[in-house]
Length: 182
Image (cartoon, rainbow, N blue to C red):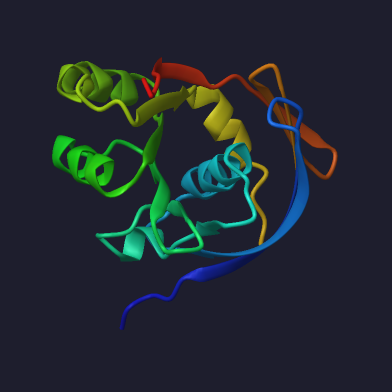
């Protein structure tokens, strides 16, 4: 019998001084049985970094043709496609063709660096693609904050990010490996 997803209730308060976005989102996040706490927390962080009233966490790992997070316009046009981890070149190409903007948040230390070395030359033609890396030390610290019911506060200023859950704080400096050119 297949394992079921674990449901996480997240109250996410975002204070993004860079984009002048201040809002609290009540999220119900299904953690796939194969998903780690690290990936779950990267997903919540990616949501916070792109927070918008129309941003949605999708079915993610359980669906091949959906990103982890997306934002659609009121007319249904795919505005933003957010992928986590180390997607293959084909997935990157397809997602860049489907959405106005694509962001890949990668993590995993040396493994992520090797992935980027392998794929970066084939991504130069995608003007709508950003690739952002989180250090392994940061994502493992974020994983320790995961719990089934969380109040997460994310403050963003000058590109630096502070994530706090209860009394624990993790400082994140996203590193842009590729900027969108549009």
